[in-house]
Image 1 (cartoon, rainbow, N blue to C red):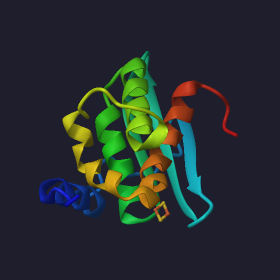
Image 2 (image 1 turned 120 degrees about the horizontal axis):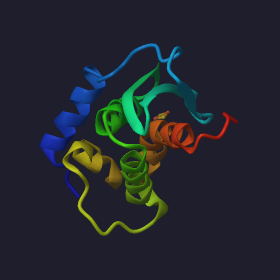
Image 3 (image 1 turned 180 degrees about the horizontal axis):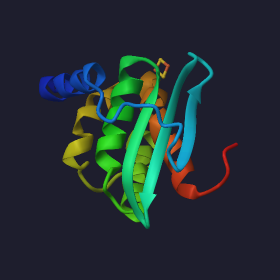
Length: 142
Ligand code: FES
């Protein structure tokens, strides 16, 4: 299936101009996503205001898809409630292989859609989202 050029351009833009990139070490909750196969490593930080994710940021090194996905994750979840952020993260997990998706993806996630045609890169997408799920779960970092 041919990649939608608009989504591909949007994905590249997230890589070249990542949103919410910054040192997360002073955030309320900090988590990492690592891919031992390639060494890519993303650190995310979430600041909560009650049940709202007031600010989500990240830093790290990774391939273009990994960085773009982290950027999209911060944009899609900043300002959302914990429940909304869970639902978005769950959608991404299912969309990238964990299970069926009934709904169309939210617009903010559309730039990731070309990667669904490249199963070998699914891990690249999921690194930041798994770190987010860990942050939302409230469990201590493993
Ligand atoms: Fe390492 Fe993409 S190649 S996360």
